Amino acid sequence: MKLFPFAIVALLSLPVAASQVEVLHWWTSGGEAKAVEVLKSEWAEQGNQWNDFAVQGGGGKSAMTVLKSRALAANPPEAAHLKGYELHEWASLGFLRDLSPMAEHLGWYPQLSPMVRDTLSQNGALMAVPTGIHRVNWLWLNRKLFERLGLTPPTDWEHFMTVAEQLKAQGVTPLAIGNEPWQLAVLFETVALGEGGKAFYRKAFLEQDSATLTGPDMVRVLTRFQQLRAYVPEKYAGLKWHQATNLLESGGAAMQIMGDWVKGELSAGNYRPGEDIDCLPSPGSQGLFSYNLDSIAMFKQRDPAQLQAQGELARLLMTPRFQEEFNRVKGSIPALTQPDMSKFDRCAIRSYHDFQLAERDGNLLPSMAEGMAVPTNMRQGIMDVLSSFFNDPKANSEQTAQQLERAMRSTRSGAEQK
Ligand code: GAL
Image (cartoon, rainbow, N blue to C red; front, side):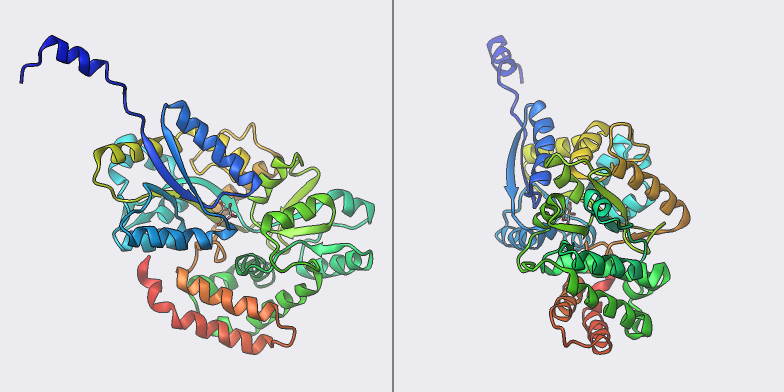
């Protein structure tokens, strides 16, 4: 068709449509929201529009419920924070866009470490882009409190108990934690790593070996886990993870066991990670790195404008600049290989260093609590058993080990999804 000159002029003067994306996530605490701001502002810098779909609740349980109802109504957002098994489950149901053509065209694969690529791929296809690597097995402690009371940071669980007793005797809450099942699962997982070790963790959660799940090591891990109930804040019911972090910052509690999203919260409150609040591997887990890989997946779309917008967002997430700025605020480390770590805090530098060593030595472990190791319904089953156990002083470790094994066995059919 021949266009008349005035038509060409009219076409050229049409404003370039800004890309719009609606992104579901649960990054709503102070530190998390600051990290989302980094993403929003880089997106806006490119002239695009961000439609925030934020659902409160650490660990993402409510966000996932809301996402399901949107998907059932055939109206999912363009993008969502989906990770680990949850990501694979959505991909198996056919909801997600295959990003492999983009990855190949834009040369993304060499920038992804084997763990990252493997976690995000389903049958060889890339189902999400990574936003950062969180380490889960951290112990955070309030340095001033430790110095004032002349305590040394615990390096194993036996030592942790001694320190916790000393703190308690001085009227200080030893361990900042709330009773949400996912927070308890993080604590349990670090006890399993530190008391049971790598081989135990693998057998129990990756192989789901019945003898290990009901054996003496599991009984010991459960007993230790339950002993920690004596050291939680008086008002631990309903305490969110970031409120627990605020307790730690203010000296209302001495320690917290949690992934390094804690660090985002510290920086947002002007505390210096690695200085005011120290970061150490959780007791007994030196050399091990339990990971939680955050990622954003794209829901299938027909509209070319939406497809285009998704592509642009994915491209932005894969830039070293975004990865560095976002992760500096979020508390994680960039998920692309060979990041420039020069502007990161001490804890991030330590995390990156430990990640590399763990990768080299086969010590990277997917976090069960964060949905990286077992299917979603199995994780839910584990969390149910653990939280009733933790909250019942009369509960027995042997019986609980049996319950745990049963809960995992009964959900095992879903385990083949990955
Ligand atoms: C995790 C998520 C992290 C984090 C945390 C607390 O599941 O992967 O990015 O922010 O929840 O909300």
